[in-house]
Amino acid sequence: MKTLPTQLPIILHYLNSEFGKNKVKESLEKTYDWLKYKLAPTTFSDQLKKLEDNPSDPEVQDQWRIIIEEAIAEDDLLHRELDIRLQEAVAFIRDNDPEWYQTHSEKQLSSKMPTNKSKSEDKENLVG
Image (cartoon, rainbow, N blue to C red; front, side, top):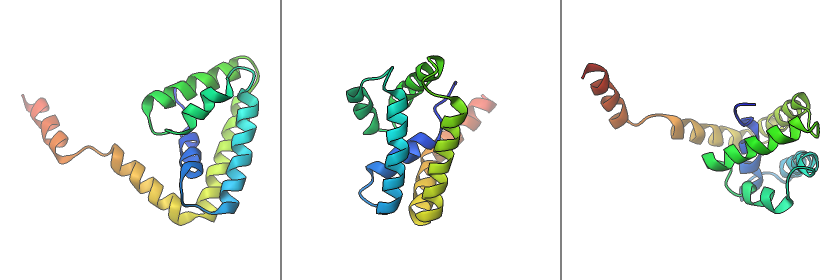
């Protein structure tokens, strides 16, 4: 696994959000509890707690990726099962709290878009 499944930060953002619907949070907590259970043989719970709080941080995402890779390598977690569970959780958010999902998606997209300054610098670098 070269990258962290994109669904995990979305799930953690929802769980960390002050907003959100209780039934969605309850469902996500079940999914996240399942993941923590699967990761328990290779990871300490206090380590996971630190990672839960800042899911957007690239260093945190890299740590998550490593933890998940180790669990898969140790056969504590099946890659396919992880993908299915995380996809189902994000679909549950999208279907049951579409406003939050749309807002979160727009924020993520705008944070990844280059600014006008960097676009002009890129053009200069291509020309120069």
